[in-house]
Image: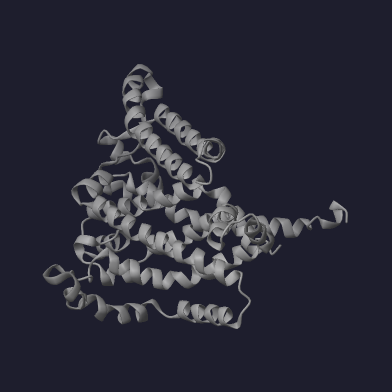
Length: 384
């Protein structure tokens, strides 16, 4: 069939492009706007004039701003970071990762990239620009008001770093447990054609459809009385699990596990069973064939499923707000608490800065693993 026959009509192309542009604007505008607000003084952030929010005259009058040189160098650093993450890092991971352990290369490479960006953007670059700006006249004069005091307030004075640590504990636990059991269960169910396997999948789907509040209510008495149950084993030192991250990890894994099993099973079904048979002929056991032959092929699917598991634990509000005490609270409930209290405009901008902060890890994850995510989604959508 010729390419001309496959070409869409002009009206359809214009309609599709318009719809896509409107959707991108609607989706991206709130994130862009609160990000701009988080770097302004309260007077500028809540100004009725949108230009004041963007250019921040009151913020600039307070001695906080960016020059044209600052903006140019900042864009260069961000562009270089994105290019390294998308173009250079995958090749370096392929070249220097230990054999059969590519995930180690991704972890080390990702951490090195994030650390390098933070040091360059927030330490080296400001030191260089502080020297260059006074020497370059108009190029070094502030044109946009910008201040990072709200981020310093929320991370240092308000202890938001502790909420970030708790979020990382919860999300890491959810991802590790969900993927560990999900890969084993998904592989077994994908290679089994029995009715029992089908019944297990249907049961998991029904379990996934339950409201989260039902699971929380079911687990709550267990966590509250856990010290009594564990006393015969641990004695007087038996802990109460209510309010601790372990309780949230257990509930979120229960919520997420059916999804991971279904998704990973679809990925395993796309891997020919002949690979298992060839590995068995070469002397591998079932588990060795799974670990050495199947899993290296499955990494895009595992990364994609792991990202969805990460998002569940990272963005959860209901379970974390009900099961965690104030000391172990994660970021999302903490931000909701900041917004719900009667506060001054300064406190509200601090809360906005906290809300913007939680998007950074998601941005870096998607940027680092974009190829694997696209490959995994494609593999899970097409059979063969």
